[in-house]
Image (cartoon, rainbow, N blue to C red; front, top):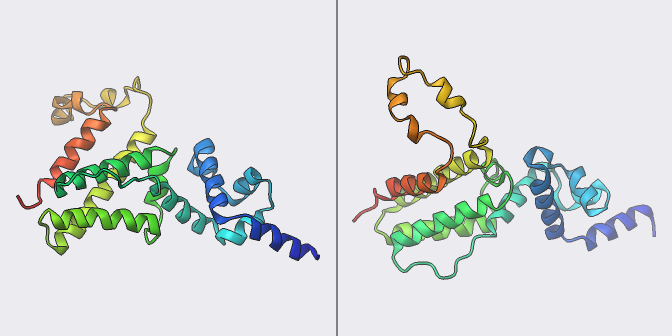
Length: 208
């Protein structure tokens, strides 16, 4: 067997799912900036070319990782009410993002035409259609829910220590009177409440 044949044999025996699982482990250990095909190869104990055999490029690997994050969304025991089902799906989406370090940043930068991502989008759009939205409203509401959830989850995962008071010190009562008035509500944290508030605002536009 030639060296090339040996490499191809190793690559063939290493499933793509194992590569993506290892990539997610690197993500959880090092964060998004620490993810590379070399780091994944080191985690697996193989050559970098073996990883590239399965994912071709780092960009493609990141897409597959993002889709694998959404594989963590379960679809059992969803509410019968379409509006409540949409709410529950959004909550499960958020929890899947938060289950991995920098999960929201990873998914934000990925192209969404992958199986698990499409499955989630289909379930969410279906709930919105059943809630009475027309096609345009269902599609754009699904986008809005996704963008809002991704943005807030990114903020949550990048949030500084609760003791960080830079915002409080930066808001001057004379220069920023409106911000000063609501300063108590601008503190870091309260992500669960902020998520519920924003989701209510989005879904309130659905037909009654």
